Image (cartoon, rainbow, N blue to C red; front, side):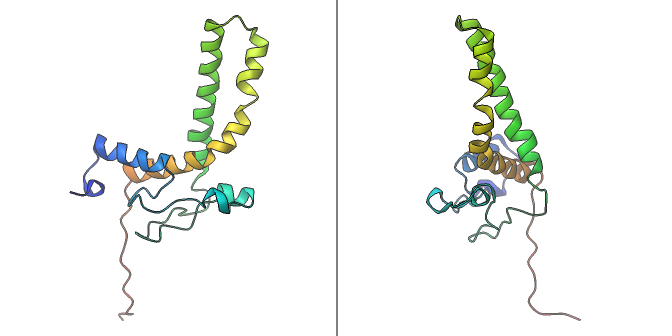
Length: 145
């Protein structure tokens, strides 16, 4: 039984999240969304997803600005919550001064944001597919008039 064809279930959501964390296609789970690390030569290669999955044809970047919510919502949200949480946990568990803790928790945030950008886009793509499934329209090669 193919889970991808099931209605919205927890099992299907977990499958999409698992595939997203592996940076793979959310529909088939077989092909990568981004270039492999060995082939990344610039920041553009790092941030830009491939055009689509060669196996199932699922388009990754549907329109300009599609991944804007991934950066603002998912990436900054996860990094911000992680920084704030680690600050308060370390504040209660250690005797480090608040100023030093602030620098420990905030200074790495921009760098972590760059490292997490691919996963944020992948998670956004999986969540978008889960909550708003896109059906592929088969194009007829014959021009019917």
